[in-house]
Image 1 (spheres, rainbow, N blue to C red):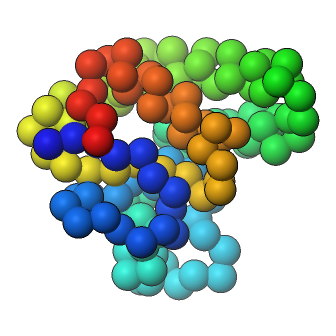
Image 2 (tube, rainbow, N blue to C red):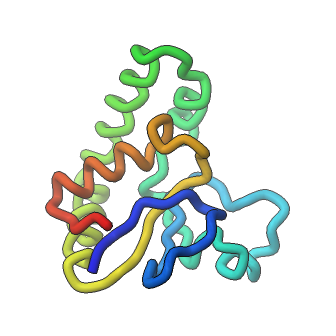
Image 3 (spheres, rainbow, N blue to C red):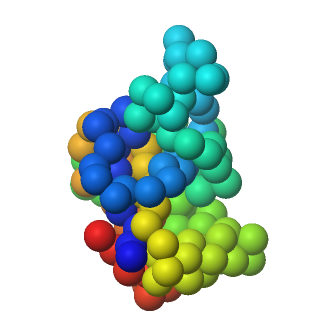
Length: 128
């Protein structure tokens, strides 16, 4: 049992389980009833996505220092009680079931999901 960190829209892996989209907006041009069948996500959970302002900051980050600034701000957003509870819940669920969380970004190293991976690990999630 584990949580996987994935790129939304990529082919699902065997046993991946429920796919949770931690993105600010749904995929463009895809009918809602096709999100799951096209391997985007089964459940949309924008609470774990960076705020709209931070998404813009991440997209504009060109230097390691700019990315570090984004990462610091995203971690601050995830430190709210509501988001800490969500991270703790996902970590606990990863001990008993398979599921995945993800984003659209091509490069995980320059995506909030890399930070989300670290935050889940800090909450003792089983990562696959």
